[in-house]
Image (spheres, rainbow, N blue to C red):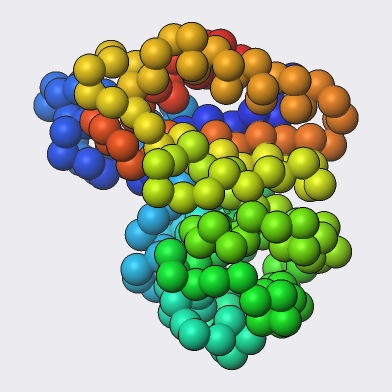
Length: 248
């Protein structure tokens, strides 16, 4: 069951994780190697801001163990626009940039919208139509990160189901918590870690999330859960992810 629950953090290069999560003196070049052996997934934020080349994705693939997964945030040029329907060229540029080099370690692709982007059914559907379903024979999974409360509607969920996509479920003070239950893929961003807790969240709260993930994957053999500890007290994110992994 737990092999269908992937747990991690955002990125792997963060100064406060040195001498905290990472062993003292660990070379920065070895941080991905270390992180990927103590977590089971990483959400890559760098791809949101920069375009990477195929050798970089191949390097990430080779530095991480079998079964590890990368979730990639799509480039903001594709999503930070007034009309999502115009994103076709940017979507193609991102998906053709070398993602396929990750092989079996290519997890969901996250398309993060601007917080001010309001739900427009026609525009969202036009965007969903643009998303490629496969990449050189490898199926792609798409997750929309809708940050405006207007997306918390049945119409939005209907559109996601129609195009076999899912939405981010955020545990956050700033962003809406939108259910994912019409997709076999659950994608959670847990964003309330606090510095006062050694594991970011109180153990009771972590256990509730872990129980939800266990129950989700137990419902159907196709169900998967990706759980990322993001934002909040970021210095606590690795400890939160490791505690969560022990629970599942």
